[in-house]
Image (tube, rainbow, N blue to C red):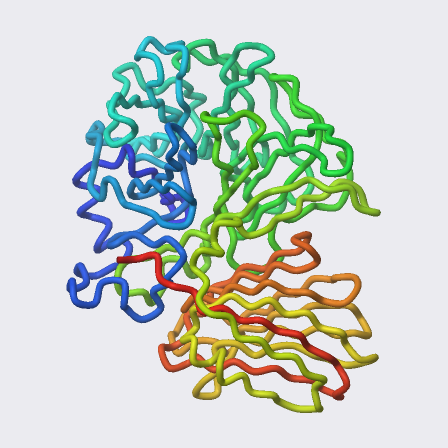
Length: 494
């Protein structure tokens, strides 16, 4: 089993595995209570667990007024902003030779499984340590998702494969069926299955390879979005690729087959940054036609295991609302930070100026200690390179620059951290049209950038040292105008 496959699903994590992860993932001993949530690199308004590793967000649901999420622990929220860990330990004992991988959770409102109305049922990949086989198993909960019982006739789907994982289960109401999307990882396919009772499954089709199929497909998600301009509903199939980023397809789904609108188009990517993976949407069992929200794993497998964090490893992204919008290039995803994040804002600081060539320091933003939201509108001068340096100090920084001649936005973190991390010195870029407008969320070791009204998003880790809190504007030639508002963001930890 390779380390990149250990994005495990804690609602079925054994007590032995829970204890073993401390040494396996290099988290070290538990942090002292006096430093908890104040450790170096610890984000303050992104969710991180008190201790341990977290990987892929799993089992994202809204039920009985609560948002719930799993992955090496269970957490719940009323507002998608403030999270409470509801179970930090193992909550189901598995057979000795079985380890759990990524999965999902559904609410069985009508007792199709026989475990009662509104039982929570988890579907996850079970890894057999002896044969290295990956198959799909289920477990059920009668206490609102705090504990789960392992189904004694597991696995429920077994094709005798070592690369078959990460099921997402949804309810497909037109057919009155449960549908599972699960990755055939190295075949670069998503397999679809249907079931009446969550226990017995029938294969219906495979999708792929298509788009980006260089190395591997994992963590499929399947959901509907309404086209903003027309009200038409379309299906979105999202797949994590190459252990590094996500692509998506837009099309139709009849309960058995996914048919993409543009099967031979260039790949469409969810995030153009360096660290966004394995996202899933919250399945809403409380409201129909509710806004669609998602979170992802802020990490990349090239260095996930070497993160310098002291409390454990792993960060989840800020919650994002998803939209589907018509553009000159066709239908595209649009992502905006969840509206509720505004409750974390402190008193705003505003800055408006036409920049001279060189550096313009922002001491008021620097005082916010790398916990802030920025709204930045730029009117670039012709042939100027203009932008911001974030997390500055000791000769290090994260540079966000826009080239008005080419229209390219570049994020450079090649010298952003005092930690030694393999393959971490990287640059991301994307093309945007018109004057750049940014919403930037800087949170200790993470930066999330939303631009072009959410049609472009760049997420990245920085691991800025504690004294790297400087912020500044820059202009290569001068003449560009900037209108900036900054809000300090309060911590979600008590």
